[in-house]
Image 1 (cartoon, rainbow, N blue to C red):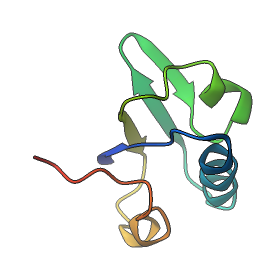
Image 2 (cartoon, rainbow, N blue to C red; image 1 turned 135 degrees about the horizontal axis):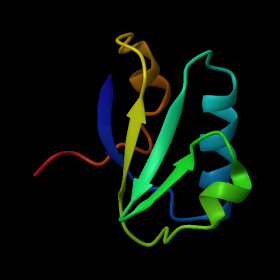
Image 3 (tube, helix red, strand yellow; image 1 turned 45 degrees about the horizontal axis):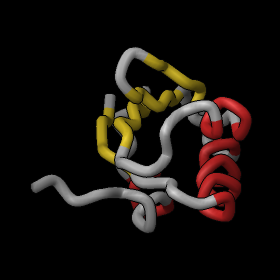
Image 4 (cartoon, rainbow, N blue to C red; image 1 turned 45 degrees about the vertical axis):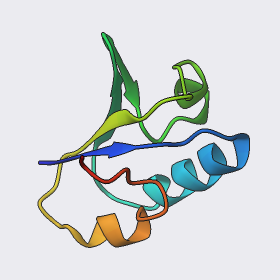
Length: 77
């Protein structure tokens, strides 16, 4: 499993993020506090606080997906 922090803080970013993940044949979820949301669901994404980075879990070991998501990934500090 791959875990990264992502920031999707605008409507356009949510659309692009969801579109990218919808094309992938992997399970993935966003975790914000106690909320676990299907990362492919636009409505689910809008139900969480998008002002700050959230955790993305991708149930795959194929790290190529990170290249497609590079605009959303928040570097670890």
